[in-house]
Length: 479
Image (cartoon, rainbow, N blue to C red; front, side, top):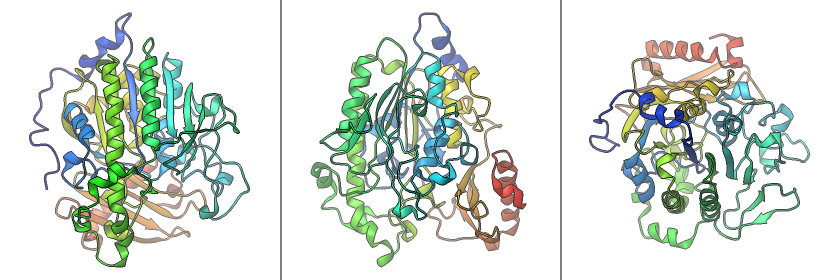
């Protein structure tokens, strides 16, 4: 199944990546490149129109893909909201930054939140002269309220006060974790806890308004703007009618076109939700288009690195599941497009890139490779952006970990052909393995682990060799 643009990988590269951009960052009086990082929540890789998988309309993302590098093998190593964000900002895996699960009052007792003493992506940018802005969902702080044991009874939203907890973001138009899309509230800059701004409109539209204003008023120094839109995260039905209308009359079996969506009750929630999910996708795409147009009109597009990605995918009925966390492609793989006009040639790149790799890679791309913090566990892969070389990573890690019990969970990997996952119960006992041949079985319908003991043994060793270096407690219990 060919999911990429024809001939996208037949591109010409002249010289090395450093030769392409080093001059623009080293000359005196030349402004460092801006960074526009857009990551809507729960936006799966298949839900981009150019992929020809989900039947969605995303003209602005499609155009961005034509102009940038599409990373075909990007993943969310721990596919859930808070751990992704912590890995992105710290360049460390969950065991080292201590954000192993979502931030709420059931996880707070385990110190499961982003700590002030971490040196984050934004801290580095701020200390190197950047104006840093954050818009939308933060979900990295510990909410106030009584401790609870069940995450379903948790308080999720949290006020992050100005100062060290904001890690260098001097422009702040954000909230913790609040899923009201039609009238969301925000804490703006130095506003105290009791002073919230209610937007009064669909959250992606409001956040695009704020981003457009930020871009138009920040022209005298380099800036980095992170925009975390909540849709297409549920509640899916909270999306304007004009986007719903696009999918209203399309039969559900045409929308849920993946052969791994079972019939019957298992996927009924998806059948009821898919049209609204795609409506959210198209609505987010329109707002991204507005932001990119404003960037162009400001005259800063040529000197701005644009990143489009997401914190994890959405199962939407595949294998009878909703949401994320699981190792299937719909959850584990994420969109990743990076555009820098004149510096990065448009292409499709099959580099295996993990979330902790984003911080060091983008810092290097900007010209701040000497500023990458020493504790970073991700790799600087910017040298592979012009095409994967022999020393590129062979796989990405998959992790399910929880501060409540270090013995259980899942560990695995995804490489050029296979997805492998092993599971342990809360006593540390192995309870099974998954192995999918994504080449012959792209919808992961057949677990071949029992038929391929040699591969299972090989991949198990590769996983353990990797997690030895990221403070994974599984190492204590052997391999």
